[in-house]
Length: 111
Length: 118
Image (cartoon, rainbow over all chains, first blue to last red; front, side, top):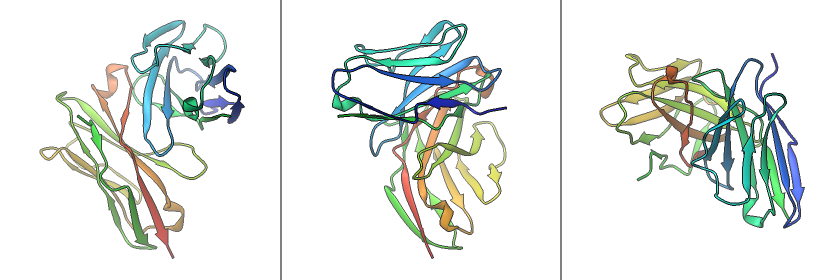
């Protein structure tokens, strides 16, 4: 049973480009959480999704950020028109219910 | 107010010694869980140990134990017999609501960098 898979592991984007981060949850898990870790900070919750539904997006910036978890395929975190301040590690976690298992993260660098 | 406070930005310990990493939390929810994660330089988040608010005994997992003092709202991580491979960032996190509530959003502290020297 593979763990939570995130890709890419590292992503470099120029200012103004779009970034797409993918997360495949563990088999059988229907809950996905996205967290962001700014340099020298702890992880901060962004959004919680179940299949085809956003349950809690209270941690998502109001503009440029969106997330989805379609019926088929991975969960996608999309950042439009990236700025330098978006440079961070983005972690995905999945759970059946309760305990969450983390992926290895995607490190986004905006140049 | 901070929900999770880790007051030690960095800690140094010699190999084979024990070390305690501090964590205090703030919640009015009677049902909650406390987690510790290790983040090595490679960046992944490794789950170490969990303590539920209703658990009667302190959690232990191998060399890791959690010193849970509910009245003081503290959940310190104790690592016994430190190893060089323990050098990493350590994060304390809290989930409000019971483990079976189906909702697993975690609030993290800012972390403590642990360096183990030979």
